Amino acid sequence: MLIAVGGDGTLNEVVHGLMDVSKPTRPILGIVPLGTANDFATGCCISRDPAKALALCMRGEAVPIDVGKANDHWFINAASSGFGAEITATTSPELKRLLGPAAYALMGAILAINIHQYQGRLSLPDREIAGSGPVAIVSNGCQTGGGIQVAPRASIDDGLLDVLVVRQISPTALLTAARELQQLPPDGEYVSYFQAPWVEVHPEGAIPVNLDGEPLRFSAVRYEAVPKAIQLIVPPNCPLLSQRPN
Image (cartoon, rainbow, N blue to C red; front, side, top):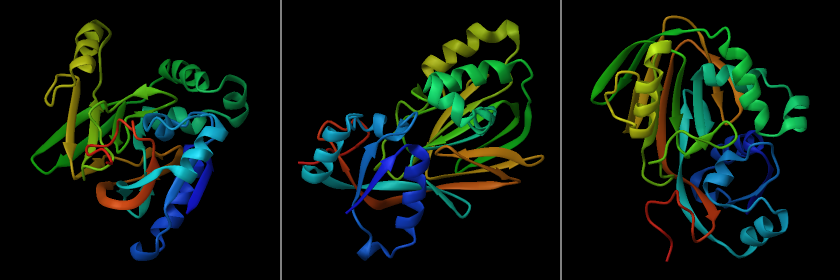
């Protein structure tokens, strides 16, 4: 067993190490969440109490879960591009220590004053989306940014990624966009939500991408789900499993 003690960024580094090991000898993964946001662990209902989380690692049952891949990089929770990635990349460690998850909301408000629109297209197995917008999120888990639910239909063992696209919204269309964010339609005017085994993003220029809190830049990126890649210890009530352990 290998236990990741830290936040989403630490977990991401541990996953990269695990994926370098051949699958038959890959250790079981446990999590003790001690980071700022702990989005993946929180989505799995892993306790933020270190003693309870460690006890789960010792006594819990491991289940096979998917891992996301972005070109040659791995992620276990979420990959955000555009505006969402800018927020995480520009939030300082000092601000995170001072405010916790609220630091992301504060930085988001600051950046929104001078928001940058990204042009490009997204390719999925059955459709293509083109246009401009501030954010696209590809999720294996259900939340990011310190507790923001971005993929309420996500499962970590279904072989699919959840894709949320938010296009450019005018001030007069905020009500419509808010309604679409609640409904998450596949073909909304401002919001689109899909589940797919892979998605490709082709921006007109390099865009910031954030993988589990780790900032990168890609001129093009292919995301794909790698099914049942890691054995993870989760609580019996984990809501992100499509098939609950016996």
